[in-house]
Length: 253
Ligand code: 13P
Image (cartoon, rainbow, N blue to C red; front, side):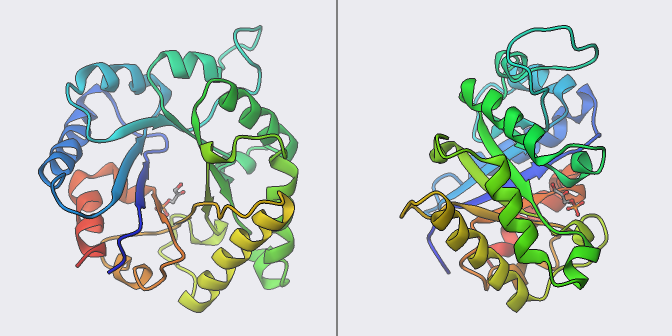
């Protein structure tokens, strides 16, 4: 078993109320109990913006980090009814933010809009989980690499602090479908993202790349055979403390 740092990140999506604190609390306790282990692991939960402040205040000792799932591109305050900015989310207690998720791209978010959001979030020193991935149609047309390359190239600028960005490869067709990529294909795509990122940004530093899409306690063991994966972005299964904790336990089994 590898001793490289692995991320287990939950994306709650549109889920949860104040009572859902018990889920956060159980995951925090699990993290506390296993803190003496030599395993290098980081647990982050990205919750709705309505809950970040409450959870942040209620968690007395934090063995997990908290984040949110999107922001408006505008920096600071402004005339944008119904929106929240990175500044407001940072003030409310977020350390991490998911940007570029396919569910938001589907609602019309473009690479250039994502780029502006990344700029805004970095200005607030938020850590970014930047999602990329191809649709089934693009995959079937053999366009996966082209799509991944253009998502990286047009949403990130060379001036960014790359230490604050974690990429998450989430094939759109695997989200919430119980379908996962073939392991050899996944390996190839993760390697492509890492190599291409280094090429585009002329850096020798290898970026962290997570996998996301239908990860559960049963299939996690399959992924542990791919050392190139730096962790997981977990949707549905992160809405249950048991399912989320079982994923972590089974990964290291
Ligand atoms: P599921 O784990 O529910 O497939 O969702 C993945 C995802 O979208 C994480 O961002």
